Image (cartoon, rainbow, N blue to C red; front, side, top):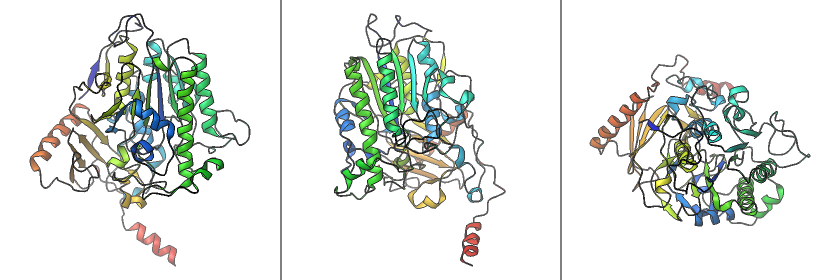
Length: 474
């Protein structure tokens, strides 16, 4: 259901937040990683990767074990920036996925936007109205010109380049071939460059409330690590899920970047008044690692594709520990506005402020999360990894996850309390649960005015692949 959040314009001293009226509102730093899976961190049980800074941060933070994103980059980022679900912002897919193997699609994709075309204020604009200095460093992936760039959404741009697939246009080493980022010295590593620019932003605005989004291209492919980091994993014993030394080196570089950012907050004397969020945009790439014990990877609707590592720290407000309350990227705009203490005109948001559960004691008002995936996702060659996703809609309650698939009209139901690996589809065993959740999901879709993908695709030709294979053999 949509949620209307009421707050007043430019009112830093009139507050609804938890900090005292005479105290400066908190700085906000969002570290938004690319393609980092739930199981890629040491604090989540990974024994091959080295993530000491994030692991240490997790010990002091409120960790959300059931935090969610969209299965792929652009839709997740649009959900974060707009605070709205996909039927509202209309970004259903990564730009270049849309033409992928059209002959395997039984129904037509719903038309997707390539950048946010709506008029509702986005996260940078809203924070700027509250008096924050707003900076964005790294991957944007919601357009590369005009209204599609972060400068059009309240941010001071530092870098927002890349290509339509989502990785750095020229790779991770300078020259970057990026119109939004001047080249550095030959061989400069992109992560080092973005980290230094982010630290520069913190130094520049340390005496004012600031909002920084650092969205490293790490750990998206191509796998281009620093050679000296790869050496760290040469003698480390691999695990069943992680053995790619190059990918491990990139995860390590990401961890170092996060550590440097946190250290800079401490050096500038602003750490104790900064709300820090660490999260990711979707699950790990199946070419780099496995998500076990979770099912699926990036582009999958299963937990390995949409459950993301998420933790938050704000001294005196968050308490260390694990929260199992389901949360999503949609929740960060209302959370940041709540923390900022302002009052704005009415906004239509699909998330909820998480401040009430930062201490592990409160509860949220909602009882479910929703997804509407109106186009095919991923690569059919990875179907065995559950990363060829057909159009569907999903509802996730505290206990159950219900999937309504549109290509074949099938249902899936999983009890995530007992089966987070989603091994057993209970749809045939619990018809009353299916009926209840389907009714709730259908009501949400109607309220959202969601376009349901059900139009037959005239180009559908599943036998084409076999004909191509036979032709190549000849």
